[in-house]
Image (cartoon, rainbow, N blue to C red):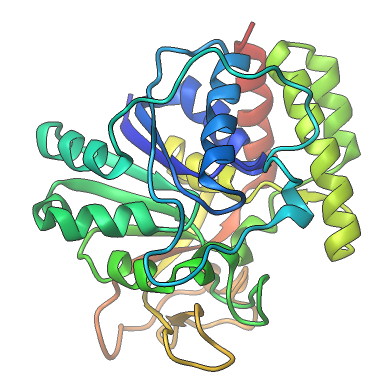
Length: 323
């Protein structure tokens, strides 16, 4: 199994990422970051997910409460007051570790070969780890990120939530020299769960599947109310699925820069795809032969097309594996 650290801010879609990761990857630890909700809540939510999935052996490390240079922005209109409203769960019996998430990331990467980091929240913890110990950039196998977009934004017209919460951290990570896989919302909006999928989860009937149904029902409701969408996009699960089975996602290498100064564009992932050809960068670009790369060399691999039917097969199969 691939060795991973899962840096997240649970979050309904983070919970889906965790349940996929625990069955298919060697999760060395879960680190939490203030994002969808406060650090206290997202850490509690991570512990709750582990208890539902009966995996108290996976350690959880709390990280930064929010960005280092700006106030934390959260998303209660999508995730509720707790950050993971919907399922009614008891307070977790297991506790987070005393070690800070950044210390855990640095120590683990420096002493373990071929560690992949999956980051499904703001990138503050990862950037801080790179600042504290620059040598980890040469040791991290890759970073699979849910964040950004090749096309449009969701929090602003051009910026996605995880990046806009801490653009300075994203800038550090994208310029670290580590191989980056970016699951932006141009990709993750192809991963849309509806009430039909909720019914399938209930038919599977495992404890994990019922949990998934409850998460999805709540998330569909808030997404419809807040964004007028008919389903719930499981954004973070895409970044995990890409590590589990890279063939699920078609991608293209490109230069991705983070806009830090624009009055209307702060937090935008500026994706240089001039070397590609196609009419719709969400789909067509990955089907057209690429032209030689011009300008600065690519620093990331951007996801463009998700094989959603096969993703569902992975998800259904995973839910059946739990008790």
